[in-house]
Image (cartoon, rainbow, N blue to C red; front, side, top):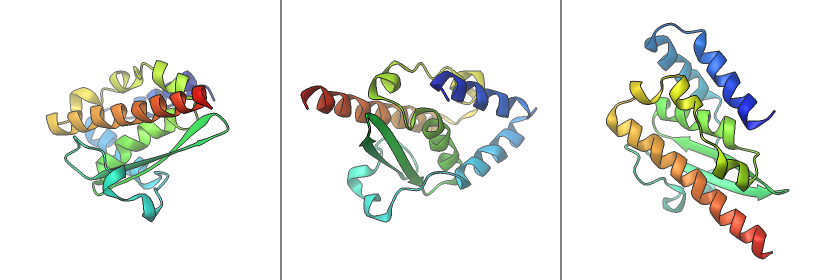
Length: 142
């Protein structure tokens, strides 16, 4: 599935819900299906700075693509990071860096998050893109 198709699938899923309480409940459900980070990566080094909740993100680079796992101590935050991982995991660094992530606005997520959760979302996106930059540079060197 292409990055764009993954975004469209999420937009379609969220379109089934009319009010934001149902969408929040769906985010909670998404949090339960998050590809969980291995315990050895739940360290300060993998903690995303700028999130109100603790969010750990780990990236592995295999076959030219980044594979993400994560965890959070907040259930809605788990759903939010899962929305990002569903679209950006198993992508090349170039795909990640060029992704516009317009689906986040299309589902109305930004405008329904508190300012602190909005800042956390931005911090998550920035960390994923930092991983992409690092692995892109490593692959260009190697």
